[in-house]
Image (spheres, rainbow, N blue to C red):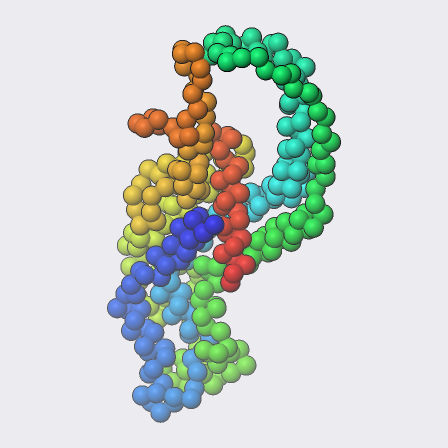
Length: 327
């Protein structure tokens, strides 16, 4: 249940925050938090805008994740919407008995056609003796959805959607979250806060989000021509993941094989090869009887198909739901 969520969200979070701070950032944080103590002003908190400029400078590379992160959340919301309405999991699952019953009935009505095709492809079976004719039984099938499970699923989808929307601005909201009223003096004490020089109002404007916006940051000196490569790799992984989700949402085939061996791990993140590719299939040879393989033959490439997308997407959404609701 945790495969996708741990590999895509948790790893993204941990990898980005393992990116070491620069010496300029470390110096700016030390000045923000500890210099007031050296000037006998230990009880004075930093100015809010001063703190924001420091954090925007230190987290400039992480803020560049914002665009692709929002695209990923939008794609996840689209996939989540598939679990509600007429195409919900409940409606599909609970309609399966009726559909199976209809398929069996259709096969019984066209028995001769199916039998001739099977014999033509597989050969005639060897009989060991006379068999008693089996009676045809019509078993009523109740395919009505369970109201309780439907409500539970709708609640889960609603909770996941709400959590995803809350996380949409995650990376650009980090500086504001870190510079909350517990850390800074707040807007009510703008004239009585530590501004980096003394107890007074902080006058410089607050910088924008992202690396390019820090060119004139007065608190943290940053070379905007040298982006962090680890963050760039994570941006590329977000693009790949978003593209796969969009393809799955649109009913297209999804390639589950990663083309890179970076820090995010191998595999598509959608699901493991054993789940997506190793589904039982019937191989029809030229011999007298069919063979059923539990797994694909070795050294055979199994490509993703449309029928493999849906269980993997289910794993995706419910894995993410488990992670979010656990928080």
